[in-house]
Amino acid sequence: MPTPGLDGYVEPWRKPEHDDLAELARTFFTKEVLPHAERLEQQGHPDREHYRRAGELGLLGLSIPEEYGGGGGDFTHEATLLHEQTLAGEGSLGIAVHSGIVTGYLNDYGSDEQKRRWLPGLVSGELIGAIGMTEPDGGSDVQSIRTRAIRDGDDYVVTGSKTFITNGILADLLVLAVKTDTSARAHGISLLVCELTGDPAGFRRGRKIEKIGLHANDTAELFFDDFRVPVANLLGTEGSGFIQMMQQLPQERLVIGVGAVAAMQRAVELATAYAKERTAFGKPLIGHQNTRMVLAEVATRTRVSRAFLDDCIQRHTRGELDVATAAMAKLYLTEGQCEVVDRCLQIFGGYGYTTEYPIAKMYADARVQKIYGGTNEIMKELISRVL
Picture (tube, rainbow, N blue to C red):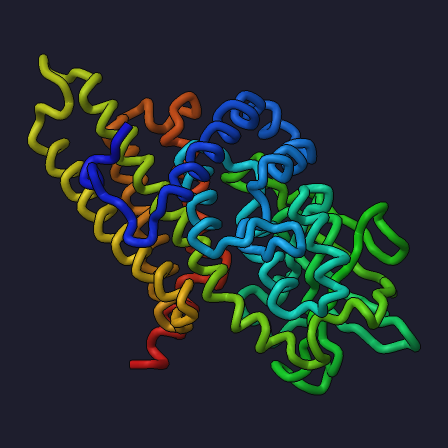
């Protein structure tokens, strides 16, 4: 179904290969994952088999060089995949973190040995990746993390905890932010790659966090009690972790923006179709002026958001996406997502508040977009610094 206001719109970066990728991704999500949606929501996490199947189809690590098993593409390919996942209404697989974030850290900062050791497994779906930044007392203030890593011979001994970790229940590989110098703030942070297969000694997965939305996507607490990580697993150099995270956050925020715009498009499509089918006072809802005005406004917001997002994607692929613009994208697009979904839900009336209609799930899923990746309040602070 074409999105009102986007009929005929083609992203300036799109090529025939993106069309082929979109079709493959759409088929995978709709035919192989969505039939299990109810079960996945009940179990509270995706199936490992779906990650492996995505790997078999070549849908993981799309921007990773071919020498490490990846697709050899760029962020436009990752964006195409994530766009199709959201349009399909599939929210169990944490591909946005697994491929959109974790593989980027390894590819950009890992040694050749580290890349050859871990990237093929992530690309194949045999390994599931996660990133551990947020702590119970830290939130968006990354500099204040308390999880520490003390050097002991050839190991770091890690003690601390992380929370709200996407893919935390299933993660085999975790990029972990730690303090290697507790006397410093930003300059005391390092990144360690933790191998979690088999739940090694000193590591414990906490409870699966119950959320108001994204029920099929696992989110967990992680605990470290004298957990030993080889020094060889240090990503880059000691003390460079904060800089590495700041360099990667623009892509993380762009990943969030991709999902936001796709959700807007889906909401507008659903609301428009419903307004044409549902009657009230003797005529279809779309025959009432107020409904038409609402649809006109949300379609316009979606079109403008799409254009802004595509400009950011082009800047990012050229290596020109700055921190402030990425923050603007995260702020504007997630605020827009919540507004558009809310206004579209209203068109459904009471049915929009029932879980049998997808718009209700979209409403609950949207709210966290303004929180993770740095809260929108932090985005405003980042933007204000360049004014």
